[in-house]
Length: 318
Image (cartoon, rainbow, N blue to C red; front, side):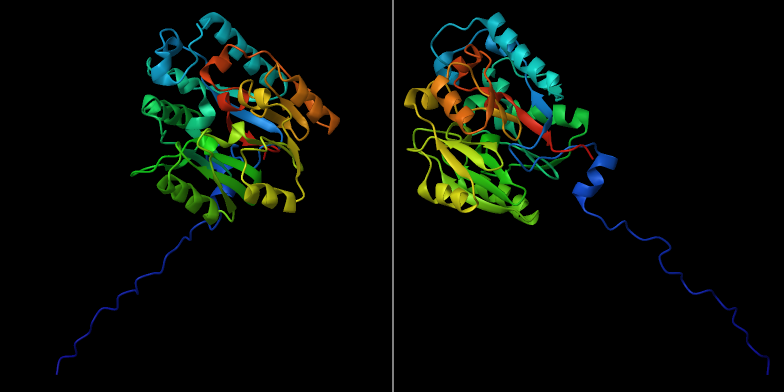
C-alpha cells in the first residue's frame, strides 16, 4: 500500500508586536505637543485668542448682546494687543484664531469656545444663535497648532467654555443655565469623570450666563466670588477644600466692570480689568498681586480678561 505523506505546515504564528499601553495625557507631549489644563491658576504657558477683526466693525449691538455705546475699533484692537503683549512678557505663548465669520463679534471671547482638559480640548456649542459657528474656526486653529480635540458638543447639547471652572486636578465646577443645558453638561461631565475628576454642579442665576463673572480662582487656596450669585452648595464645597472665599466688595465692580473676570498668570498673580479699585485692594490685602490694564473698549462686549483667553497649557512644560 502506497504510503500517503502530508507535508507539514507551520503553525500560524502569534502576534509579533504589542500595543503601547499608556494614557493619552502621557503621550500628548510626544505626539501632539505640550498642552493640557487642570487648573485656573498654575503657571500659564499657552493661550488661544482672537484679535478683533472685521467682525467688530459693523455691529448690531442688540442682536449680538454688545453695549449700545459706540466702539472705537482701533482702541479695542490696541487694548487686545496690550493684553497679548502682557501675556508674552510673562512667558506665555499666544496663538490666534486667524479666521472668523464677519458677523460674529463675540468671537473675541475665546474662553467661551473651548474648554481645555488634561487630555485636550472640548469644543463648545454656543447657546446663543448669534455665536453659533464661531467654534468651527476655533477647531481650525486648534488643529493647526496640534491641540487634540477630545469632544465636540453634539446633539441638542449646549455648552460654553466659561461654564467650566477648574478647582484642582481632581475637581471642576460645571454650570447649567442659558448657555449650558443638561445635555451639554452631561457630555462634559462624562469626559471629566473618565479622567478621574469630581464635578460640582452649579446652577447659573437667571441674571448671569457664565461662571467666570461670579467665581474665579486667584491662587490654589483663594477665590473671589460674587456672593449673592454663587449657590451655597458650591461655596460650601470650596470652603471644605480649604479655599478662602473673598467676597467682591462692590456690586458695580462685580457686575459692570468685571472685577472677578481676571486671569491668573501663576498662583497669586492675576491680570484684572482696570477700574476695580475695591476688588483689587481686597485681593492685594490677601496676598494676591494684581496687574490691572485698561480693557474698557473690550468690555463693551460684556466680557473681560478671562473671557478673551482660551487656556491651552498650564503648569510646567513636560
